[in-house]
Length: 242
Image 1 (cartoon, rainbow, N blue to C red):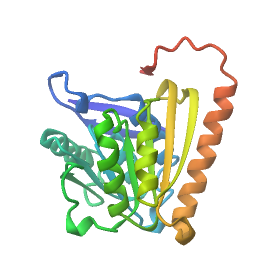
Image 2: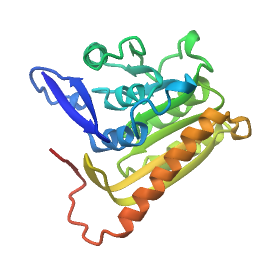
Image 3: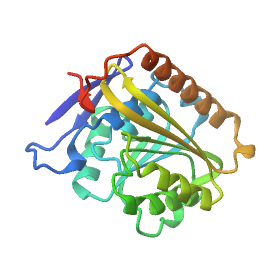
């Protein structure tokens, strides 16, 4: 089965399981839609910078595919082999299989040697749903990011974010969290959303990573302005728009 999702006027095709089995990894979640919206601000806007990006807990791969369509070299990882296989199919559907690699990885395991301090960017959406994931995810980010690198984690308002922030600070990572109520994008509405920006030695940030950070911060400000205009909190938490 193939799903077609439009992200900022760019069509993203996702390979999906033929039959829904209730597994959380094969669903399109609101946090993933927000991550895609932030990464794919426009097609190929990061192509000239040759930045490398690691997606954690990729699931159906919307975030990683969107980041790749924005111009990044992406490794999309998940601990479920079926997810990895479908993401690789999605790469072929979007003609980005030369720039996107899907790989099985569990953040509780040791980081592959070739990933250590390899990535300028690490991204993830709704990966802090269990408190026990906070420390391993923070360690993975710390090990995978290059000096001056940036991680962008989108979370649908879970309380575990505070534990994740503490884990990052213990590893000498800089953390900035923005909480937005009634975050509304063309793809979804979230009643509450945390966007966590994690930086490794922010004083060493490269020009290319600064460009990504500035565009993401601008997008967060736009979300906030739109949120301030919404007074009706009738959303039940998350609604993916058809």
